[in-house]
Every structure is written in structure tokens, then in C-alpha cells.
Length: 343
Image 1 (cartoon, rainbow, N blue to C red):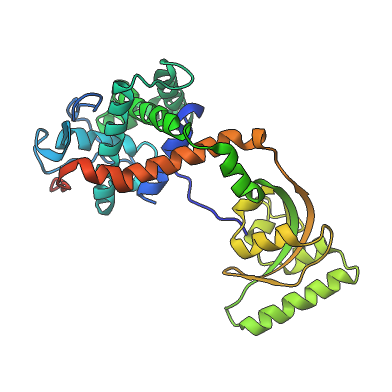
Image 2: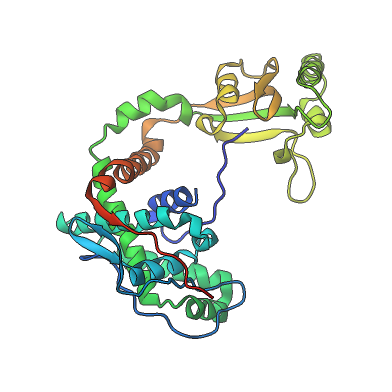
């Protein structure tokens, strides 16, 4: 079974997608380049979206760090921008994390400016990424829906460009930091995780009236039937309790997962997929999902060059997490999580 995460992000530009995903999924989950609030407009909110308004005055300082401050107006606008791709931004329980995120992005962008770091695709990349994001919003909402949503949130396209500029500059800085990582050594240490694996499997769940012993016994019986020549795909379609075996149209797929990087499987499943002989039906494997009967159809190692960009993105994500967990705490001098305005 694969590890999964809820994807609440609308894609908007290949150059900064990796950091955008890390920040957006990880959270919920000043001066210089810090965006400044343009002040909220007063139109009625569009259906399904509600502007976040803070109790604090727009010029009240909510965070102070070495070199700058974040005001309530700055943070309010950032929260409303964030609602364009993550509805959980409206949940006050996440605001402390999102305030740290905003300060972190601002600092990383300032470091990029100070070091003359620009996105690898050129200095126009942030503007192009913003336009791509705006197009994706219009495709999703329609022209009128897009305009209504920006009005409801008190945003402008210039504000969108500024915030995506933060992500782009921060991503460029982190990419430079990741460039100092030995990607070949990282590849050698994780080579198995990048092996493409094609498997068929049958999942037998534990619970809902079935004991662990009963689930294991049924899985073992199915494994033996497959070894004796019964069609594995047919057994999977009849017995597997994996939701992934059902296609959107209701048809079954014979328990097939094709060309999945081994690192995406949960650990016990991954070990079996990497060690079982090709074409052989293995003994039942226990995971948190239940018992699995696995037949490996194919394993295809990927060379370094094929995964180099993914390794670099991984290194950049780790650099971002280190910055947020360690470096930010050293420069953040004051932090006050604001409260919503009483309705």
C-alpha cells in the first residue's frame, strides 16, 4: 500500500511547485521583500469563501525578527491569499504555524535578494509562475468566479504575484543550498527507493468481525490457491479489500499497481516487493492495512540521471524544514498569533 497525503494545491508553475507543496501540506499538514497589505475591500463575500479579518489593527506588529517585522495587515492578506489553495488557512488553530511559515518565506526571500540568487529559469520566473497560477484559478472558477473570489478575499493580482514571488525566491535560495548536497551519495543510499515496481496484490483487512488470525488464514489460503494456478487477478478482484483495486467506473483492475517507486510503499510491503522473486507469490505480509498477498511482476532500477531532479527537490525540502525547525527560532524575536475579528 502506498503512503498518501491530501493534495489541496492547485499547480501553478514547475519551478516552485516543490516548495509550494511542502509549505502548503506541511502547515495544515517585515521589510525587504515582505508583501504589504493593500487594505481590504468591502464587497460582499462570494458563496463558499469568506474573507479572514483580524481583530488587531493593520499596523500592529505580530512578529518581529532580525531585520524586520510582520504586521497584522501583512498576515491577514497572506491568510486570504492562502485560501486560494488551502481552505484550512481559515482555521485559527493553524495560524501560529502559518505565521511562522510567512516569516520563514519572507526571510528566505530576503536572503535570496541579498545573495543575488534568482530562479534557475530566470528572473522572470516568479511573474510567469504567478500568471500560470492565475490561469489555473480562472480555469477552475471561470472568469466571473475568479473575479468574485478575489473581491471576496480582498486580493488583487498584484498581491498574488508578490506572494508567489516569495515562494519563487525562497525556492531559488533553497535550491542553491541543496546544490551543496552530494546528490550521487544520496542516490546510492536510497537507490532501492527509486526502483520502479509493478505488482499485483490482494489485501485482507483485520477488524469488522474478522480477527487477526482469521485474516492471516484467509490470506494464506489465497496465496496457496494462486500458487496452484488460479488466476491472481481474478482472486484479487473477488477477494481484495483494497479500495485502490476499484476504478472510478466501478470496474476492477486485478490488484495491479504499475511502475510505482518502491519508496512509496509502506515499509513491510516495500521489503517484500524488493526481495520476492519475480513472478512468485509470497507469504502474507502484515502492515497497518491488514495482510497482503503479493506477486511482483517487474522491477526496474532507475539510473541516477533519471531521478537527479527529484533528489535535488528532496534536498531542498529538507533544507526548508531545517530552516524552519532550527534557524527561524534563532532569529524570531517576538511572535503574537492574532485573533479573528468578532463577527
